[in-house]
Image (tube, rainbow, N blue to C red; front, side, top):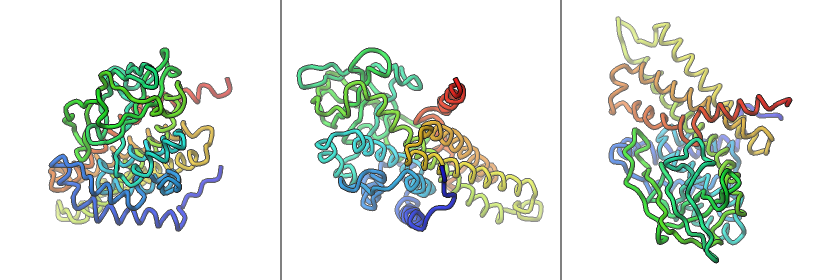
Length: 383
């Protein structure tokens, strides 16, 4: 499969649009959002007005109709200003695409126009208190009762919980294992739907995180996405793209911190000269830049494979997510080290990126699970 190593002019223009938006609308406020735990609703809606809430949703229902590579470039640029806000946009995009790809015509027409312009916000509900990496063991039940499902159970660590208007919930409609899972849309305000207390987190302060609780929560059968028993496949397809997006967010955090570290080391003087003149500093910066470039190419490769429905797209996404989030965090950490004690102080901004991108190695499937996906594919080849 041929992969272009340089973006096209159109792709560069899309990235530039996202870069300008991030500089003008995210960067000036990101520290305050982090400090005050502000969910920037109006700023998110401005992003949606540029097509950034439904990047790879069909144009006929209000989406931008672009590909996963363009999305990766967009999320990298947004994350250079605020990884937390960029990550929520990624989750919203993922849910919108899942409805576009797996919903019927009525669902797509009813839900997507509002999601595309962020008149309504969406959350993805898979993780439970007792099922994180072992997602197929989830226990939230959806019991059929005539033309309704009645949901009982709880989801954990849900981004946007309480603030979002629509929740895509993976729940058990059949027997044990992945084949018994279905995807059901639950609207905010539905009787029996409630939320836990906001989690106090290390980072991601510009988006709320809480448990989503179902107690006799009755929703119509028409809210099911796809057929009964298809929910786990739908969830995993969504995560392929989500992993690429969150990898791109790590690239953005790393790229921003690398740029700041380069500028700082040219200005900071010790032992009578700028610390950029010391070979150790130069080697550190060179390694950071090389690793960032390698991770970016891996993310672009995975995005291209997903766009082309390559048979190994899931493995490519897992590889890219593992590499980019591990290296991204490491690059940010080394940038903080180059700042010394100043890097640990909020005024310099580096510590916010460190706190925000640490979770990227956990969500959308831990990096240990990414290794498991890759290893299973390697060991299955030729058998």
